[in-house]
Length: 320
Image (tube, rainbow, N blue to C red):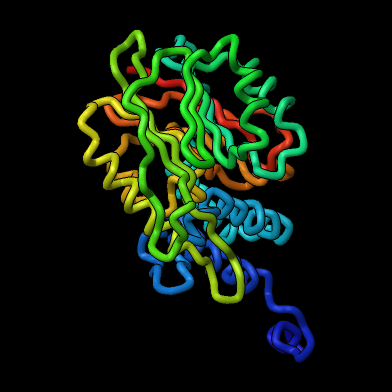
């Protein structure tokens, strides 16, 4: 029996070069999914939004491909793994760089405090210690609201609450009103948006606080229809805002890569180059708590230590 017979005998493992080609073939779609995620269709079930929600985690394809390539000593597979690596670095490499050290014009804090939070007073003390200029809260219940007001009273003399969202400020708040972001089919008691003018030392700023509807992942796919309709209403409100400078703070139940938030993202500037995963608090895999601006720049975003909520607080530096 010669070598050719041994290489092709039944029951034998494929040649090392064949295995390397399989790994190389897997690297190409991984890189394409990172670079061209916008081409993934988004019909019922929203597969495009699902991919974009967890887009940074597609980088796990790199060690998943590179490890076996090195074990099998396949140069073809190892070089192919550089394709998704380069795609990931092109999208998220800037997130790994150190942020600006200069003092921000405003420090803001965004937190979904959870309507099941067992310790609202402790959560309030933790948020107060962050030293922000503005604090936005969602899932604020009537029973818990007094605990936040009491904890914030010394440093935040101005506040506004509409439905289940609230805003506390070191600077005067005027022209406070609810913002109707209620999607069709949701009852009239649902109020998750407010708008106020903050009289900051840097000029008047329109501040929006919003909590978009939750999304669901199940057998029917990624269900975000109500979230998407609510995002369209919020985007329209920001588009009609007469004050040039805008800060949006909220639990948008979506990442900045998710096209479902495009109606909002198209009305605001580029998000900060940070991961700052905020949900779920026990093992954060996505940042769905957002700080977005118009005519201002969010220079850094970071997640703060856990509170009694299932979300992490998110602090952001803003420069005008």
